[in-house]
Image 1 (cartoon, rainbow over the protein chains, first blue to last red):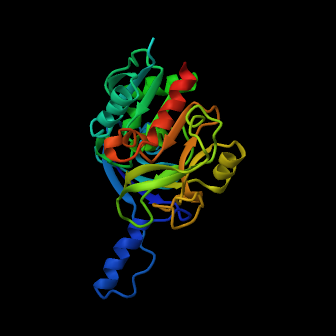
Image 2: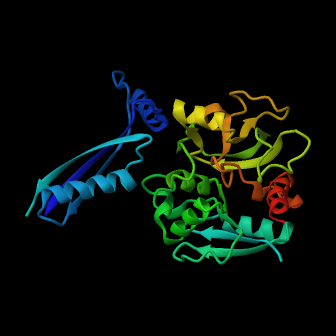
Image 3: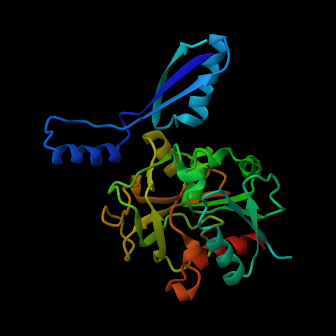
Length: 83
Length: 231
């Protein structure tokens, strides 16, 4: 069994109004060095197989078809063997 | 025989009854609700994906709704030339389903925008718009937090080249500007069709502009166009 950790980031070319709004909060906190805040998603789950190749394929499918929208998001993931 | 509209009901849809009411009581059409777990489109001539927050809009707006059982039938229907309309959240579902190009992101202002807007009809030669008369902009309400339409340069060029941009946010006199754009959409885009012209997505709510008691009736012309093309 594998533990998958997926990180989804908005493509650099896509505006992130949410990140901009959150950064305004940083300014209100007096954190004046915070720049370029961008908000993504972190998703974790287990993959119930011992075949790493099969696990990678399934995670890629999950990411491409549902977790990320490839038009505006990029994703990366790690798989940890948790037996 | 009356034309049949099918209004899909996802968990979290909240404009399904608005669409049903406008079609049944105002436009005098036959309407059925289609539950998201069903596959049967009940011989509908037109499918409407209504506004709301399908599946809580978790992950991304429309992302989970797109995989509900009824959507397999809707996608088949659309690919065979059936008429499909996505309004607001329904538009987001059509984008996630790949039936229309582009994506929707949060409004530029970060605020949920709920107000009447004016739309210029950019393509009158569609089954959704050919009865929208007199060339003036139509007054239709919007109500959304994520209606900021984004398409990359190639997609945008393809939309323009194929005359797929149907509605743009305009001012009352029909001019297009940043001020008349409620959400930051690329090119003031409010509604687009697919290349075949049978699938339309729009953020504004024509179903909320049919009953005179609500103070505006421009939405009727939209449904009249569809009905006249069915007969």
